[in-house]
Length: 355
Image (cartoon, rainbow, N blue to C red; front, side, top):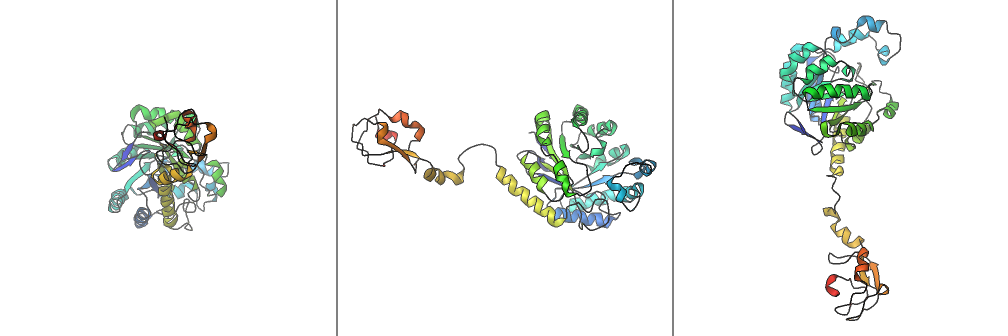
């Protein structure tokens, strides 16, 4: 797996998982609240605070949603979709203040720009771009973002492998700093959603794209079990929604992580990273004594006289085994040799005792 750098953070298999707190619409239209959430997520262990820059007019069709013939999670909103997006949109005048607050609490700032103008207008402020799942087929914005030559994270919810390959091919023409994120785009918070997270897709991505991408997970399920599974499969970027109160009214509060659960997630992940190790099979430092007392060595089953030819019936394999002792698989190399001196019953045999 290659490495990517986002500001001062190195991201790759040898580095700690990078956590993105997606504040999204959870600022509830308040700059002060947005700043408060930045502070809280930083203290809980987030590496970055992410927002979403869009104008309702350039992301949703009021007519389209009002005439939609299917029931979705948005059908349960108290206001129409267009109005909710209108309220959730970031005031562009907030941007510098949000960046200033992120710097104060020493975390990265970035955002998902949901229209072409925002890609250009925000570029000077961003260390990386995040393309949301809903835009995986909008090649125009993917191309525009990719040409900025900054790390590109792209979520892959509600898409199939053909969509992912198409987006990857386009990004890779202009940009090699790609973070490919498995995602299940369902914002209902239903606990049954775990069965749709499909973390094994990360194995598919790994097989398909190899070390040309860094793996990630954009997750909307409760808790952090999906996060731990993803990290164990090689994901090194994790994005989850963040709020301070899951009971607040709004589209993303109920399934978001809060300061307490976010901190628990990060702490559990750091423990997992320690347990994952480096992948090299070896005798670990804390096993050295265990190797001595647990492994068997070849010992004399009876007293063996000096110059006596050693037979299999003279030998037995018992614990412990010193560093000089011989492993049981070497028994055939000993049979037929002669003892240099008398070897006592149960004495450990080594090469210095035989001819």
